[in-house]
Each structure stands twice: as structure tokens, then as C-alpha cells.
Image (cartoon, rainbow, N blue to C red; front, side, top):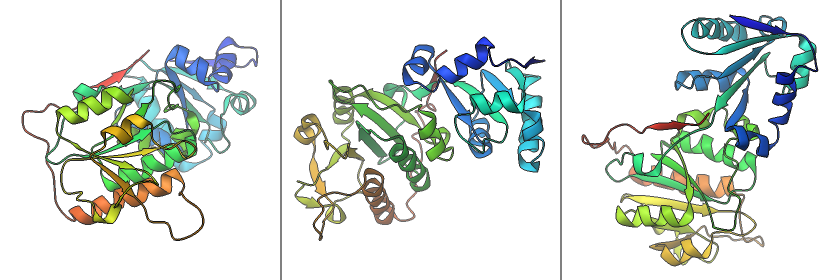
Length: 293
């Protein structure tokens, strides 16, 4: 059963506006998802919203959005989804972005615990440390989905605040790939220990690397590690890397955009592996999704 909200002073409206700020999202362990494509991907990957805010005047004006709204109505009849109906004026107030289609969902944070990640034969893992820009991380997620990686590990060094994985701009830039890619959030030192214990080769990408990325064996079990554009990888990764790989640069600049360089490395792995298929080991269960809230 839905609840109708008509006042801009409603506490739920004010709360959603506050969720634009990371501190409020982290305090509640929830994030905002808007847009037909992103919401569809969330539902396809069995993410159940805690709350759904709907402006039917907007949503029902578009056939694609209206179809998704019907799915939501069916879902709310069997799952504990709190539905709220809002006016166009209220929706304009709470919408994080334009062209949201009249739908805004609140989801609990989700991720997979590092030790719960099932390993395939010759796993293909991407590690991104201290990514600063939501647009970069969203673009990386799109590429990660396209390349079929086994997991994206988002990590941070001891003195960093950590990447805002659940920033609505990350979700938007990923076009919903944030829901299809297995994501782990962990501290850098824990990730290094985990990789070493499982004999996964660490390929640290750095402008000071000594092995061209196209000369690197990517058929083995690998973790490709990329870092912030401003600071690069922390010394921990550079010290513990099995290989420091480099993308050759012929011009005057010394680095590429993080999402571009990551895409080159991932697609080189795809090129080397070709049509090889890697199946999950039979004794490994599927990853357990951790949801807060």
C-alpha cells in the first residue's frame, strides 16, 4: 500500500535531500538510485529497494517507465517495499539528477565480503585503489562488466577516506553495471594478504613500471591494480607487486585518465584469453551479498 506525500516539509523529503551528502548516506548505509536503466538493472540482479518514491504523472507518460512501474507495483505486493507517491513538484525537489523518469529508489548498501568471493580457475580480478572521481569509477564498472571480470575490489590506503562506491553519480555513470559486477570493499593491506595467500599474481600499473602491459602474461591468475590519477598506487602495492606494468606513452603527458588506462589493461586480458571459459570451482558457493540497513 502506498503513502501519498504532498508537502515539501515532509521529513522523508528532507531526508532524501540530505542523502545527497556522503556522510548521511554512510550514517544510514543507504543510497539513492534513479533512472529506468539503473533501476531495471537493480531489480534484474535481485536488489530489493527499501523505499520507492514515484511520481505517476511523470512515470506513466513514458511506456518504458510505465512498464517498470508495473513491475514495481507487483514487487511491492510480495516484498516489504515501502511505496510513496509524490507530486511533480516534490519529485523535482528530491531528484538527484534530471531525466529520472519519475522513479527514485532507496537501497541498502551492498557488497561481497572478501573471504566470501568464490574463485574461478585463473581468476581475473580488478583492484582500484583510492579512486577519487565518481565518473571514473562508474566508467570502470561499465568496462568491468563488458570484460567479464570476476570481481572489482575497491580498496583504500590507511590514511585515505575510501572511495564513495555508493555515490549516486557512480551508479549513474555505471549505467547500472554497479549491480552486475561483484564488488568488494576492503583495506589495501587486507587485499594484498588475501591475494598472496591465493597465489594470485599482482600486476601493479604505474608510469614507473618496467614491463609493458602487452608483454605481461595475463592467462594466469591475476589481479590488475590501478590507482588514483593524482597520487598513483600506494607504496604497499608497489612493494608487493609481482610485476610493475606500464602503458607506453609516446607524447608529453605521463598518464592517462584512470578509466581509460584501466580499460586498456582489462581488454588486453580479454585479448590474451580469447574465448577461454573459466567456470566456478564446484566446491565454491556463490558469493554472499552483504546488505546493510
